[in-house]
Amino acid sequence: MKRFLGFVKKEFFHIFRDYRTVIVLFGMPIVQIMMFGYAINTDLKDAHIAILDQSKDEITTKLTQKIISSGYFKLNANLSSAQDIEPNFRKGKIKEVIIFEENFAKKLKKDGTAGIQLIADASDPNNANLIVNYTYAIINNYQVELMGKQQIPFQIKPQVRMYYNPEMKSVFMFIPGIITILLMLVSAMMTSISIAREKELGTMEVLLVSPLKPGLIIAGKVIPYVFLAFINAITIILLGQFVFGMHIAGSYFLLMMVCLLFIITALSFGIFISTVASNQMTAMLISFAGLLLPVILLSGFIFPVENMPLVLQWLSYIIPAKWFLIIIKAITLKGLGLAYIWKELLILVGMTVFLIMLSAKKFKIRLE
Image 1 (cartoon, rainbow, N blue to C red):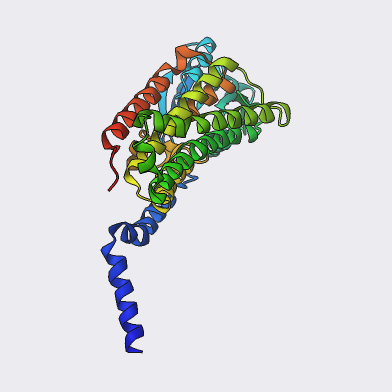
Image 2 (cartoon, rainbow, N blue to C red):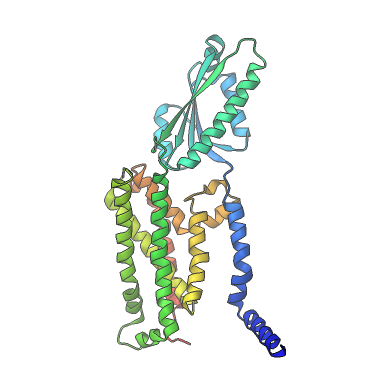
């Protein structure tokens, strides 16, 4: 029994001597519960909207103030005409446009009815539904308040219209997300594990003393994953189009080039992970904690980033998948070109260059 207790004690010392094991045991649960607790938020907060008030009377002004002061919406623009709706949606920030018809108050008092049109960006159908429902509830609440002060009953009739995804098909949201996760997993995780395997087995040192330069060795390791990940991206896009009816509104060539850029970004992430991971298990854990969870939670794939706390919103800026999702939705659903997505493309290029330079600096041509 004494020997057994001594063995158990030795195992405890062994665990606590390895700081990476301690981080996995105690750090990972804390990180996961914090990320899941704050990122998985179905409440609406500060959704950017625009208002086209063609009446500008007392009732439309009060209703606008009620919508903005609710805390769920943030007024991004006051539009002057219907021609301003499409350009504002194309910028990608506005999620809903509220249109008050002409002579709103007069029609409400005279005819007992007046119309409001709610136009939502349905490239993310879940978020579009949430925004419309919240707006509808505020309008109904204001209508009840007004009816309590009037002798004659009346009705405000909201008319809903969905941009880019009028049928509200969830597949239009999931296909870009699946492409993002798959490219990240195949490119980054598999690359980092592959290079870490060479270190673990001792074959990396053999490769490093070969006539090939270290840069060519790394390139030879990652090129197969570029090809495989690109084939996967094409396969998913074709399945989404021909099996699930997803319409590609933009340029196929631009879409493929963006996918290739994101693959290179993910590969550079995988190479960087391999420079700090000494074995396959460490590489897998770092990839899972540093790539898979942030891609799912902080990219805006499932849960809108705008609804998250500010700290997580700031953190999402360093997640390449967030920018890739914005680009791929803009091309596939909105049919936008380089004029609208060049900023996100530059961010991805900058991230790629930074990761490659950091990996080159940390890569060791001699193994310890």
